[in-house]
Amino acid sequence: MTARGMNIRFGAGVPNIYGFNALPATSSAQVMGAAFSHTAEPPAGFVPNAALGVIANGIFTNGQTVTLNLPSGGLGIKTNVKPLYWIPLETDLLPHPTLSRTTGSLNPDSSSVIQTSIKPINAAGAARTRACDSTTQFPAPIIFQNPCVGTFSDCYIFMKRYFNHSIDYPAINDKWARLWSTAGVGSQPDRYWGSGADIASELGAATYGFYFSNVISHAQNTWHTDEHIYRDSSLDTRNGVFNFWRDGQYGGNVGNSSLGYGPNAMTRTTALPQVSRFLFFDEYSNTSLDAFDYKHSIYVDDSHQRVMISNEATISSSSSTREVCIPTAWSDVSVSCVLRQGALATLSGMYLWAWTDINTQILLGRFS
Image (cartoon, rainbow, N blue to C red; front, side, top):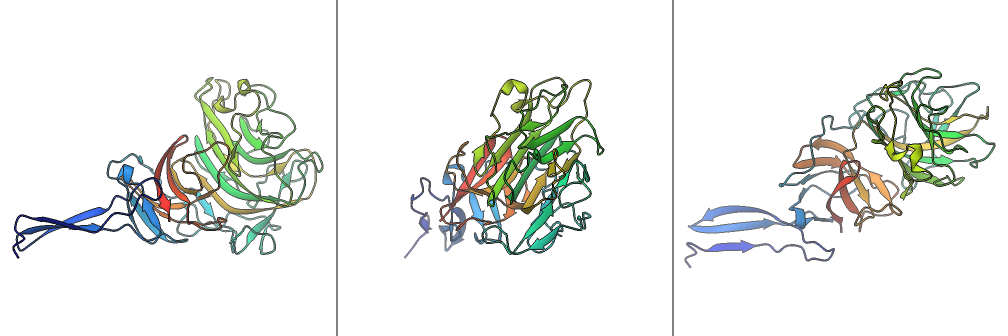
């Protein structure tokens, strides 16, 4: 049979069972004068977003490195591909030796240990850590006696927390994360996320914290997934970002937005122009309580570009379950990452998203 001049195509696309079809990668060859075009099926367990022409490569299971190609671009350039800190806290207190830009010992507090009694679902262990208090340890950070150091004009934090105390036992004014311009007692400006009793005033007034009081509080003896989203403002301008998610609930616009937090934070003034450079974790300000809580999977970056697995078909401000993945390569048209199931019961039915900035995301596909 003469096939000359015929285009013969084989390999069907994935049925539209999730609202979008997989866009197959295509290769062509000349065989006896015929133009054959072969369609490569998408990898098992994952349906790429055909509407954007996403091409997926790899084994889409927990712990595997996969690559998502976006021929039309839009991912942006991530100058430092890996997170500044990736600290799994599964078997030791160290940053990951290859997936974290910061490696080696971070001078852990002697009372911080890995234990296996209290841990998230699917985890091998978690860190038991003593939160510092303003009477005896200020300003020592949780887990590490040295702070996380970077240029945190942009800062994204993902971590899991477990509190074995109630929010008001005693009135501890727990600061979950603290960004400082200078490492030292009383340094200003200081930026806090926490469960304090009072909403803090605008930068330049008596206090400098931003508290999510009684809006996204913690539950005792429960693992929470927290995301902190921060961007320094211009001088004397409310264009900074001071947001927070806990267990999929968004807290960035709680309270009176005129106080300057959420999406219109003023974090720098002419009098206090410094950018954020030091990150500390929990501190109990109003007590000398010697208390422990638990931490797992700390991801800190000076970029908001990241890859996440979520149950969200569209990004929601009220309900989501998310796990961060660890990027290993990034360009405007391609991203590679290590998939993390984390505490998710299964990857099946979850969505894979790429964040390109604080409020912009690209849907890469869905796990089947």
